[in-house]
Length: 265
Image (cartoon, rainbow, N blue to C red):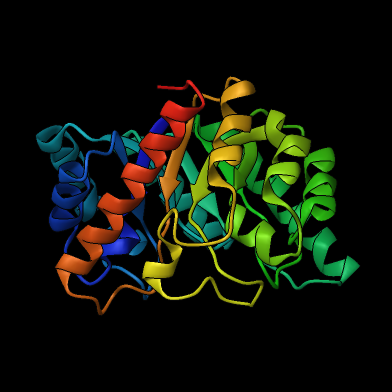
């Protein structure tokens, strides 16, 4: 497994700062945020301007470009994101599921949209991933399994996030076992409680919440998963840099200890 961090944790700072701090925390790689409003890191409507910076920072820091998070399923935005991924060498694009929970028509619309985007991903030679998300059409294991049954493209995979599964009222470790064969990316963070949001940034740090992340990583290891495990902490845009760095380092240390405990490192 490759340990990375999403640059959105440093959304209040420039991309160079995010790369530098993630490198100092000891991560193997980085997930570049293309989340409008949360960062100004990889801005899709001017990706040609951003791409050389992304490549240069990866070369300077030695961080592997593990993924991009671009939440929109808008075809034009995603087309540009895929072009940016090809230019920078980013292999995975993580997008949001869209729709709303409990609406069968909304779920089918999400499936149809993701299927079309998976075809475009195959065209570009990148992998499109989606995760279950609180409040969205795809929000738990049953709806995730429906999507996976409907989209068989090798350019499509699951981005598994234990915090959303936890807030859907499920056990993330058990849920992972049911889908691990289709997991191509992992967004990891902790969570306290089953509320709508994941909590304050420091409460999302691995080891601060209620999720059995050791058991979660053990399931990945036993399934011989070798892809990215990217920390995704949201809500820290206004935090001082020291707090962002502390969250990154604390979480990486917890992940490393978990991997050592289950024999993965």
